[in-house]
Length: 209
Image (tube, rainbow, N blue to C red; front, side, top):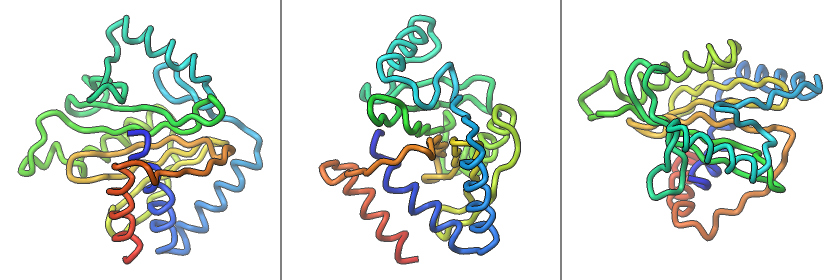
């Protein structure tokens, strides 16, 4: 999961905002204004935050695990939270942060509804994305920019100070919400990742659009 989103974010956002001058101009204007404001919005969820030291993250997760709030995700590579009341239907929230210099720089979160099936439209990513968006509006406020991508569909992007939140669909089942500290710069290299190879293949398809 640590690499699954890294290739997609720049392509998704650039692909979305490049297709229309208005969304692109609006996004760039807001981003510039928010970064220039000097305000910091580091809060994520469950007491986690951007800039959180790696050791503190693991300690916090241990406490939450002991309290029965979270558990280990698939293949013990993510943290899993069972969604009960926050969305319209029960689901799963998987997450694991990216660290830069030992601190959280980005937090990719993947959502899915329990009991999904291709014929069950109310549990599809189309419905889930809107449900996640409404939940996030309650937690982080309004002000999401709606942008279009030729293959990924509609994405929603919000910038407050240094924190950017991007919500978009991966497939018919999964929805991503990615928190990014826009003041932190990082060079990413997925060349040794098997998952990264798959991502690059999809990336090429996106770039052809």
